[in-house]
Image (cartoon, rainbow, N blue to C red):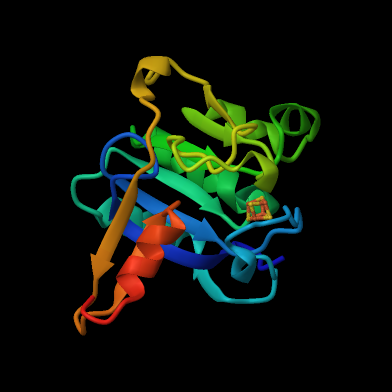
Length: 196
Ligand code: SF4
């Protein structure tokens, strides 16, 4: 849609909650899967948000200090599959591990010729639509119980997963707060009170 540019929603160059270890995290803009109860509806439109040339994004990742890997989420990363596969290939050649969140089911990816290439590069795949009726805030890396953690390489396995919710809270230069992860509503309410 945007040639060799990614359409980005957000970037976090250092996070410890979207996969094992310290990771560069990339939210890609645009998702047509429309899961009921999705928290990221602002990331649904495929209209231009923030474009970045894929080579420039790769360089930015390689300049990030102390990361063990990269995590992609969104939005729906597999709706920018061509650039995603290109970037995953470069990253895996550099020895970085790769984690991918997708709303597509494992079998849907296997059957789709322009998506199945991810199986050559992804170490951990979080797959499946978010189902609000199965929401569980005590899960590691997932929002609902139907979503699956798939270990696709020998780098990680089930012992990496200890079920618990993780959130990260960032305090900006001017005291503004941002929360990453799947926070309980009570935490959001508490942080919204005066004094925080
Ligand atoms: S796949 Fe993710 S971003 Fe897309 S609608 Fe479902 S929960 Fe939201």
